[in-house]
Length: 505
Image (cartoon, rainbow, N blue to C red; front, side, top):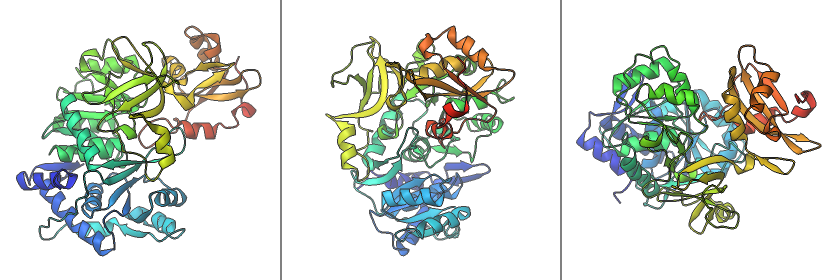
């Protein structure tokens, strides 16, 4: 079996052993180091009893050992389960149980959490990073057990931005399909390309579009432990970074760095953004640097990115996320299971070679989500006459007020443009007259008042869309590790909103 992630790593380790693979601050791992170090760790896992097909968790923040641990798990023939490094023991235990994991590799600072989780259910072997770092030096070693092209190599549990998380299966075939298509449609991903990652390695952007994409292409991935805007600008220049990806918050932070105005960002040919709408001012800030910020639509189940705005259309169609990719189709489907007409809102559905074969051991959910060859996203969208897709909202997020559907995304876009509004999330509040009514949770600055919000929103929105509750706060809104605003956490925090806040209109 040669069409595997392990075979790609072995090839680059042999043909360009001293080429940089991963850069962490001032430390660079070349391909030979990654190959030999991860092989030694794979043998260590074997000695711990890990067998082909076993699920092995990896819980750690971005750091030098992370990719070595990930490759070591894959080379042992195991199934990599990337884990949120912020998990409590109870949260970790649930995911380990859902995955049927037998072992977890963890940062030394998280050993106590992993051990506590392991003691509260079926036995789990805890392997600390200390065991991994002890294997950094040693004789060259090339070892791997390849999984079949259709066998699971990773199970990525979705972030749960709207509810219960599910384990998305990734195979060698789907991963290589994602890389192949990306190399055809994104100039920033090609043999030997350089990308910058300021998101966690443990999620789809970091694992698939960062570590695995870069490795298959023999490229260089510059990995930051956390986003430091000024440093990010410097790294783009220093490494001639060609690709960067993230949520609008990341691009806003980088554009706000003092070094941004005079920086040479001409190397960037792929700058894609998802998770929230891109404010016009942010689009223009990057356009002035000759960088096209392009909206994407995707989900873990579709490899992360199913469609993106072409560079040629980022100014004229900034709210569009393209019309699919070369091999990936994205369409709008009605409740009757028919393709929607242009301008008609319906569910976004996806088919293509990067779509997951299904959720881990979830036949009932698979039957609901994968129908007639389409992945049903649960998101609402609309397409124009030329097939361009525009994301409308998440089906579960819709607010039904007086029998009328209201899209929180539409309201958030309007409210975000009001001076003094930093971050905003719109959720449903119960209402005795309308059933539900919009409530705006806003991180505010300056002298912004609730009256200001209502006055400005009323200039743009129909009366039934204007929020009846406005909550102004100083603290940033809660976010998922991916950088997206966590509606689940906001709904939990404001579950009793109507009891503690007065209507503003």
